[in-house]
Each structure stands twice: as C-alpha cells, then as structure tokens.
Amino acid sequence: MSEEEFMKQQYLTLREEIRAGKTRLFALLVLATIFIPVVGVLASKLGGPFASASMPFVILVLMFAFLAEQNGIIRAGRYLKDHVEPKLEGMKTWEKWLAENRNLRDVDRYFFGSFLLVFLLFYVAAASLAVEIVVSDWQEQPRMVYSTIAAYGIGGLWFIIVLLRHWTTSTSTSD
Image (cartoon, rainbow, N blue to C red; front, side, top):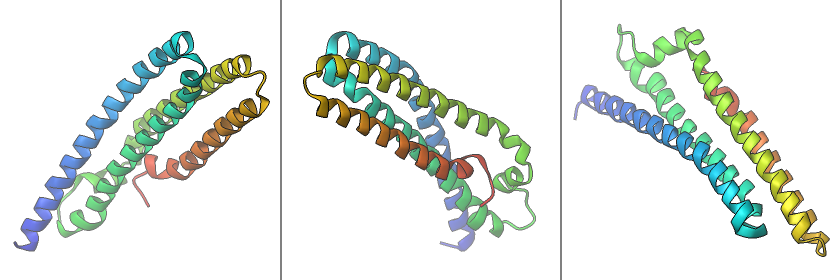
C-alpha cells in the first residue's frame, strides 16, 4: 500500500470514527436527559434507599461516558490535523480550517458547557434527594449516612477535577 493510499484510508477511517462518536454523543444526551429524571423519580417512589442512593453514581458514570466520547472525537480530529492533513500539501483541510476559525467553535463550548451544567445539576439534585432519603431511612446508622455523603462529595470533586483538566481540550482546536 502506498503512503498516499494509507493516508487516504486513515483519513476516511478517522472521519467515520468522528461521525460515529457524534452519533453516540447524541444518543447519550437523549438517554441521559430522559433516563435520569425518570429513573430518579422511580427510585425515590418505588426503589427504596439503595436505589436512590445509587442515582448520583449512575449520573457520574454517564458524565464520564460523555467526556470519554468527546475525548475520542477530539483525539481523532487532532490526529487528522497533526499527522494526516499536513501530508496533503496545498489543500485546505477541515481540521486546519477549524483551527484557523476559532470563533466557529463557540457552539461547541456552549453545548459542552450546557450539557455538563445540566449533568451537574442532575448530580446535585440526585445527591440531595439521596441524602434526604438515606438520612430518613438510616437514622440509627450515622456511619452509613456520613459515608454516603462523603462518597457523593468525593465523586463530585473527582468529576470537577476531570472536567477542569478536560475543558480546554474539549473546546479548542489548538494543543
């Protein structure tokens, strides 16, 4: 296989990976915005304390899945920009064009920030509800209550740390 054919295949494969990643992101968005409120209500009404107590962790998993999917798209795009597109001399390529027109990435910042803000609000609401349920059901077991609150705090803090580290790479076309 020639280098030109190899680069073409890499380009097509990575563009398809980006397209598939965007499809998965959209599905995750729909799933999360419907799933979280419905399951949260069912857990608080029917599921008992353990179901309610697990909701914040389910939300954390969905938030990390969103970040992981976003990161996969970014890696593919950056590889295209840094390793494939430079071989295409004299051509205006997509990733290079995006890097030169940073203002076109504003919608990405707004989408990313808005979605994570909604996730964070879901997390805070679910954790608050779970703490209320855990406190009322486990009053005689204060260690369980404190452990649960500490776990939610650690989970939320960990997500904020990951988010802060990931923010720039999720909203920029530069290194």
